[in-house]
Length: 429
Image (cartoon, rainbow, N blue to C red):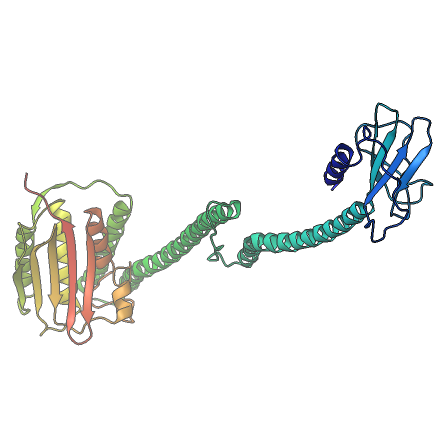
């Protein structure tokens, strides 16, 4: 605005208000049909300082400088009560000074309005920015609210909670990824600890049950031996041969139990086996012949499982024979006399397979889960007339595990059971 006023003043000074021209005739004092209104203030003073004329249509007049300015300057109103003026004074060779001025009232009013408008706009913009900033901050902090909620859930014991992962390019996104990774490690650590504690608890329970069962199994023959010895000492029985036979039988039973316990202890220590190539077909054939000799009235057969290669493994021949002997003995002992027992041998994939199948009464689901536990028996009684210790299948499981294999059982009530042993077979060199 000020530049436009300066241009108008300089234009007037160069044209109609040039001081080098003769002073024009004094204009009319007020605007009329001969002189329209003019925004310019014009004052002409001769060399003697006499005021020749003044043109001014404003209610106020500028405080004209005493000396010619030669360029536009800003001055106040005469009497200090009015708007500012922009004036320019020039002097010609005759000493006549012409002053041209324009009121800045309109410009100042415009500036004031602009200041007010800018203030209002600035306030509105600041409010809008504050609101937008608050929204952005709340949205950016929302993941932190999720972190807080997740932390509260974890504090209550729910370790499965996770924070929603945001943009990995943002700090909140990277924080959520890191936080979830930390939660995963914590959950895994707690799960491992819980599993370890559960395993230790189960081991402790098994140990207590094992000690109790071992004590029970040993106490029974010891009680019997002590009872017959007391009868002999008191002379209550004259049949000394019968007493000695009963004592010898119970001692033999106790000796077998102790041998089984010692074998399990050695297997638990993971002592190395005497390994050599073992043909499981020969082992199975010998087991069938032995079973037929022990129980000639039972139907015990040998069958071959079709598969690649030969059923040869690297293992301890005596221990593998004991595995199959225990399985066959278990089938003969716990099935009725008319039940068939079949020994199968062969290969499946990279394993050699031994199976002992029977057509007996089968096992309940609970019995299938616990049949390889030490001293576990499927019937409710704790002893049998056969004198079994309840360790035969436990020894089978331990020996198979020592050979790097696994043993499993399939059984159906009223149909029969299949005990299956899989051991990695020996690859031909």
